[in-house]
Length: 317
Image (cartoon, one colour):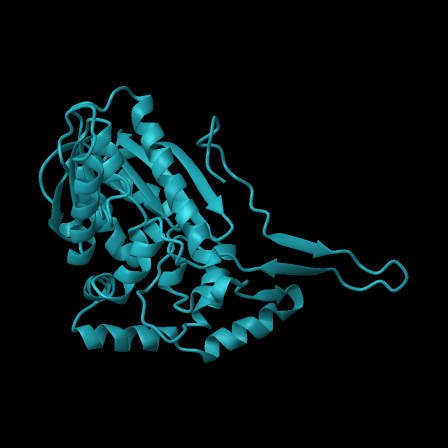
């Protein structure tokens, strides 16, 4: 559910259902949890669930689930994947989003009907994140002439609407395929039939650590899921150094519940290769920001059935 007037209020999670005990034969209460997805769920459930629920876990089966998880070895799969591309997380992400990941996420971010129920729901969640970011930015005034760095721009879902609002946009992505698609979409949407002069976004192939320059606002949506907290700390610090006024981040929130769902997802890796998925606690992100002199001013949670994303806006302390 997207945020409207209460854009930064906390949204309760309603993913747990308690089954009442039989009135005549009392039994222990059992919690039934239906696994939902995190931002970019398909990144770590390559089968994409085929439109069905991932798993139903009985409360009495938590120990059994933990044992099953311990017998699987997702880290080994990840190590082999990294070795194949000759590097770590960054190289895996670049390889994935230049190949099979690009084909998958171009469909999710686009308007094609060639998506399953889960992918369609993730599309909805991501679009709501973009809408909320645009609302946040426009609430501060006109975007005419405001410089914005869209770090991890994907196919231009945010960069293009920002340009339509008059912002001067620098957009980058680690994937050359994503950048080429974003440029194509920008030309189609911004050069045809525009009633006012629009500055075309400047697109560039770049990873987060290599970004430079100074911008009024820096935005990084659904990218930190690909990197562990140890690397995310440095990325957050670097992104903050590029911004003069505001930094907007969205990330997959780390809680016991979400972490369990992620582990369940790793039990069903599917036939295709995907990236690693890392959850981040809001406290860790806030700590990383405080370390470089920034503070969170606004925060919120965006959820659909298969998409969960924490959104924060930080400013210099």
